[in-house]
Length: 230
Image (cartoon, rainbow, N blue to C red; front, side, top):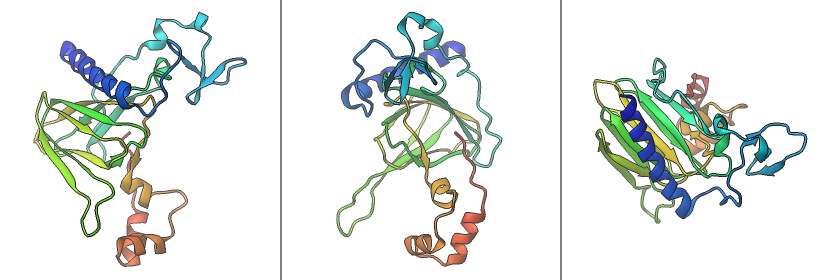
């Protein structure tokens, strides 16, 4: 099992590396590495992080352990995203790539969301996922086009940068997928959480007008607890 996780992770990272080199959101680095540190006395500021003195860098700065462990899917969404990005693997700073493991309970959902700074490529390890993304800027008189596919173990699917996408476990057994993203810090905007769970809340009149529903519907949605599975 450990070998399978390793092989999948390597394959996904290799695919994402190709995206990063061809059309990465993050700037191309002009140095071998820039291990991130916080509040340095004297350091270089690159891509939103300070660079550790190269003389102090060691192999541990490029190591993350534990992605073989399942995420806790006992939550309202039935899914858990375990991300590996510059926040917990400082050696990723300036390299334009990150990784995530996504665990799904039966019928678990990674809800519609976007990554404003990254293309995502996903590889299914176990289970059956229904995935899709929605295009932006539809022509006049047309709706946003939806692209969907059912994925099985070994299948790979790409979500273009910034587009709304989702993954849903349509099987009766747990599912596991690995995702690689073309940014060290891709960001995530979960649509329902951002729209109905913002702090402070968006003016209900704005949402009533936008969604063309009664204000009671908006107030009900804003009163709900919007779980974050990241």
